[in-house]
Length: 563
Image 1 (cartoon, rainbow, N blue to C red):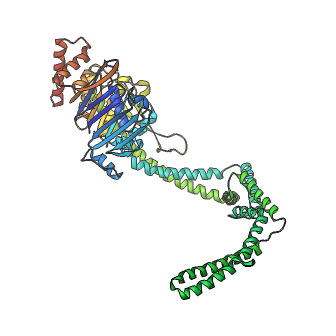
Image 2 (cartoon, helix red, strand yellow; image 1 turned 90 degrees about the vertical axis):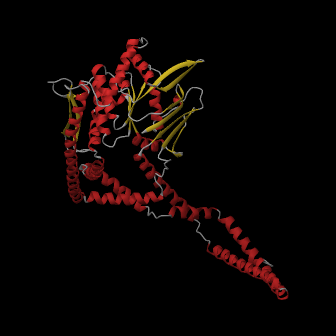
Image 3 (cartoon, rainbow, N blue to C red; image 1 turned 180 degrees about the vertical axis):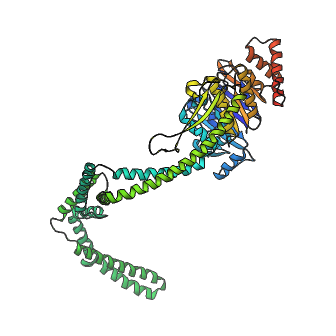
C-alpha cells in the first residue's frame, strides 16, 4: 500500500505531504483546487510522461516521492537487482525546469520504463478516460483475457501463430504468377552472370588497393630501397662493416674488462639485425617488379568492383552474399513445384497447430465470459442497476483462416439499459453514469485477479447522483476492505465512506497561488460534507445532516447497513 506521498513544486502545489491510510482514502475540494494534481504526481512517480509544464513557475525543479510497502514489489526488486530498504519501497521522480527528468528506486537510478513496470505492481490509476475506453470494443478482449488470466496461454499461442505466419509468407513468395516468376528468374540470372563473371573473392579489393598504392610510388620506393641497402651493405665503409669493426673492438675490450661483455653482446645483436634488415631489403628490391600495364589493370579492376558495389548498394562482402542469395533463390524458383508442395504441407501442419491452440483459448474465454457476466451483473445490482443486463459475447472471427494474432475470437461487451430491451453495443446504449459504474465493477472484479495493491479512482462519480451515488460509495467501501483505495470525488456519499479524508484547498498569498492538502478530523469532515451538499450555504441543519451521514456510513462499514 501507499504509505507516504511527498509533492514539491508540482503546478500550484509548493509542498504537500500526504499519508494515506488503509481502506478508502478520499480527496475532496472545490473544482480547480488541485485534486487532479495529486493524481498527476502519482502518475509521474510511477513513470508516467512528464514535462517542464509540470514544474511550478519560478522553481528550479519539481520532485515527487512515494513510499510503498508491498511483498509483490519486493520480489520484483530482487529479480531486477534493486535493494529493498527495511521493507519499504521508495520511488522518486525529479523534473527540472528545462524538462529533464530522473528516477530512482530506493536510491538506485532507474529508467522511466523500469519505474512503470514496478509501478504497475504497486498502484492502478483509473482516470476519467478509462470509462470511455470501455466504449472501444478493441479493448474488450484484453479485459476478458485479464480476468481469465490467460497470459501464459496467449504467449504459447503467439509462438504457434508466428510460425504459421512465417510458413504462409514463404508460400506466398513462391506463389507468384508465371509472368512474375519468369521475370524474377531473368533478373536473378542477370545478377548471377554479372557477379560470377566478375570472379569475386573475399579481400581482393583491399589487396588490389594496397598493390596499386605501392606501384603509384614505385620510383620513390626503389630509390629509397637502393639508398638504404647501399648505406647498410654497399658503401665503403658500410654500416654493417663499421658494426663488424665495433663488434671486434668490443670483444677485445670485454676480454680485458668483464663488465663490458653485455655491451659486446648488444653490438653483436645489432650487427645481426642490421645484416637481416639488409637481406630483407635486398630480397624485396629484387622481387619488386611490375609490367608497364599492371597499374592500369589494377585501376580497371578496382573500378569494376566499385561499379558493382554502387549498383547493388553494398560492399565487396555484400556482393558475394548477393551472388549466393541469387543462386539460392533461382534454384528455389527453378524447383518451385516441389518446393511449393513441401511448403503447402508445412503450412497446413502449422495452421492446424495454431487453430487448435486458438480453439483452446476460445474454450477458456467462453468459460471466463460466463463468470465475468455473472460477476458484473451481480456488481451492477449492487450499484442500483438491477434492470441493466451485461453480456460478454464471444463470436468466431470471420474469414480465413479463422484466427488472428490473439486467437479465433471476437470479444464484445453488450448491455441493455432497461429491462425487457435487447442487449446492444455499450457505445450506443450506455450513459456516462452507467459507464462509470460498469467500469467500477470491472475494476473490482479484475483487481481480485492479481491486480495492483492500491487502486486510485479519479472522479469515478462522473454522471452519478442520488441512490446510484450511494451504491457507488458502498462499492468503493467494499473494495477498500481488501485493498487500499484512493478516490478523488465531488460526491458527499463517497466522501462519507472514507476511512481517511483529505481536503484540497487553493488560496492566493502575495500574488501567488498555493494548494494545501489537509487530513480532516471528524469536525472537518462534517463541515466538508456540508459544503459538498450545500456549497457556501452551511447551516446547523446541513451540519447535522452531514454528521448523520457520517454515522450512517460508519454503520454500513461496520456491517450494519440500514434498509
